[in-house]
Image (cartoon, rainbow, N blue to C red):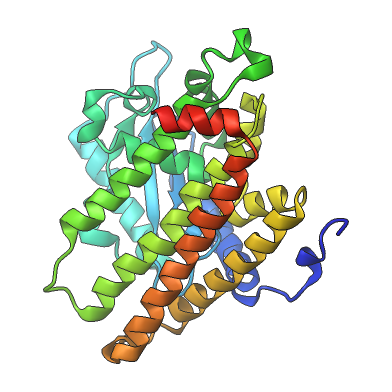
Length: 332
């Protein structure tokens, strides 16, 4: 199949269009943030901002809000820079003005998740504090679907430090190293997402909101977690490989593994078709669509098919090609 006809088949209109839109929005947002938070001011040089969610995946459509993380890094004395309350309020007030001026919807839950996370907490992998300080989510999304907006040098340094922790034993086992620590942490994040979905389900939500929560879990959140896991299912993977995968979008990762295997290419093609259906529904933004029971059944059928394609076809096929790693994964 050469470089697989899969890549030359039909264009993927929503993936391509939303990527162009998202890249434009990121560039506009980055320029505005760099202007308003000039690094000439001492406190700004210790803040790293990165985008996740639909913008980080290059899938932002009208109505998508900004999913941002704010990391406070260590100053010259090796300790985390400490904001005064006034500095913090001024910072997020200006961030909200940027959000409004550029026409993004208000941040979810009144900006509840717009807060600073320290570099120390971000890299303290496995700490009990991760149960409540949001650092697991910040770190997982940094690896899975992030784009830097302020202080890219800090972003790259944080990424290097995090991956170094996951690969602490790599130096002595390069020929047979499996990134089990990283893979288990990605799975931990996935399980957290599924548990949070069950815990936060609210039958009092409007029907479209309730079903969208389920579809986002079954499509975009599954895609971002397992697209990176799929790339890690091979022997002797090194930290430089992971750094390269992190900078890809989820579908760019799938395209890479599809290039090397005809069966994978066929499955990824089916996955893209189903994801296009999801994006088409997302772009249409028709609240009344959910009032028809046939439409609800259609949506859940597509969600189940996407899950089966990704987990029971793609991941199963990849895992059977690496029985040693699969045995190790089954033991945990």
